[in-house]
Image (cartoon, rainbow, N blue to C red):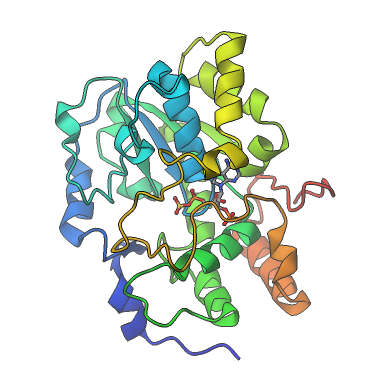
Length: 300
Ligand code: PPS
């Protein structure tokens, strides 16, 4: 039976700003508010995702595309430092002193992004993943949250996610918000599933969007170093370096399974039906197609 999670438990780990929840053990309300005035450059590249949608994967791809020293292994810089999160910046990286082109990562909804985005029009890569796999990945991630002493059971987490009372807010609002406002930004939409199906064309698409010409050999290197297997053992990419105050690594890993369709192993038939109903209500008219299983090719 799902537990009725009190607002107090949620408020213990998250704070709400304008309808979106943030991890209060890693950032503060002031940091999030100040982002409205962040100085933006035309040459910036922002990777935007809802949590658990392939962020660290795309961070690795972009870091490899932009940095030869990352591709050939001569530079040992962790991806979180190459592409810092703007709203989660516990090491206080000074964004203004960074040379262009700067790469950033964020889980922000479109309406909380820096105001100058609309005038400077930097490049935005928005990666989304089918929301059932996001849910499962998120459920496991929540076990790693340090201030959450007792992890949520599956049913409880299912209900929290469906109602958007999780870090990052509602998946439905995040994806539909970015999608319906896409014309206000310079944006490339990618899906986790297309990357999973065939990574090389996905890498080429990203290269084209960010205007970086890599030869075939370099592209192959990016693809090789961005596979799940390679990343899992790459300490610059696998987030093992995070301190236990941010994610308790005794209780889980960032690179868990890296598959499409894992939701089938945990969602009940009733939960799946309920999910489909909510999905239809909230995403109804949007022409976004998701792959729910790599073998089935069934999209909706
Ligand atoms: S976070 O915490 O929001 O930054 O998480 P995020 O990186 O967005 O998502 C984590 C999931 O992405 C999977 N992942 C990958 N899948 C395939 N290939 C590669 N290379 C890869 N790297 C990360 C990771 O395993 C998480 O998914 P699950 O389903 O939990 O395995």
